[in-house]
Image (cartoon, rainbow, N blue to C red; front, side, top):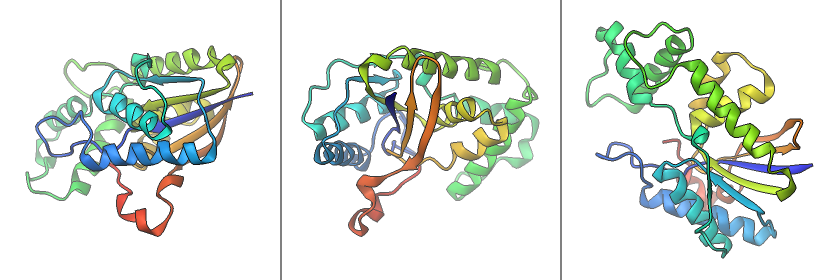
Length: 225
């Protein structure tokens, strides 16, 4: 069977005017992962990303660490993150009293997102959203099908985002929406989920591992945003 290395993007620019780009640490996380693969002798026959800047920058950094060209990525929009700002805003239109203060701890925003995602999965959010939960699930399924059709490449590197990766695992393991919501907030930056696959099936082998950050000197670089 072929192997899929499904990787979350490096640390993005949380709190900046433009979240969709890597922080300095995010670029470094990606290069460290590529260097780890280079030391392990792991080579990839194909690279797939969404079209978000932070995803493509992560793939570029991994390729730099590997010492291979980074100008020939396959793009699939099904790997893009869902619009968490739109989902959260729609939830707050229902429950304005739950809006965190501007200076609230990040955990309060994470708890808000969990509640908003649950309502989204139950089709309980008002207004016009960029996509429904079913549409989100469908496009991630389309991305998995696209990847399965690349099984002749033997080993595939795919860079995505936490929500899409959680949905992909949910599809593979046939879990309920609650599992997507929980997994979404657990994924580490440049965390690796490993699968074996062919055109007919995908099997999970490992979830959310960061082997390039396992040494104590890199523990400060484990992030979740």
